[in-house]
Length: 166
Image 1 (cartoon, rainbow, N blue to C red):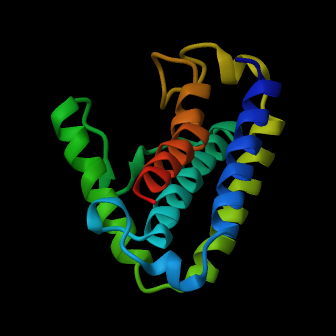
Image 2 (cartoon, rainbow, N blue to C red):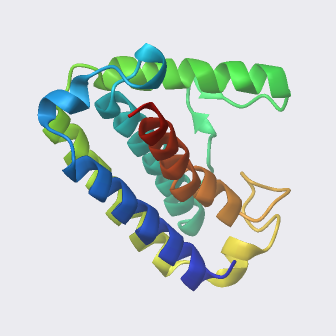
């Protein structure tokens, strides 16, 4: 995947999400989602938070600043089971932080996160996106995989779950 393709996938997945959101009323966005727990609004806040995180990591990398994954208080340990638990705690924190916000605010946050990620990726040089180990916080794989996992793959995974439950 090159930078142009990466940007294209981010844009396409965002368009897919926007088309889905356009079919929902504000009340629909608050209804429990697949599994009966998170609503569409909650899931959108979750996706938004992860896009915002990766955008911040990329911005810090571009500026030569150290990156903490995930965030202070929710740091990776290098142990797979522990890191999974850290991610789950962070997801719970994201839910608690945003659960009482109105859907319109979450949608606006989502749109800003998409714009922010797209803008940062557009400024990056391809070797930093495509070559493993170019960014210290993602040392063993090309960082485009992290970007994909926190943007278009993430969006499409949750969209598929919503569409299956409809």
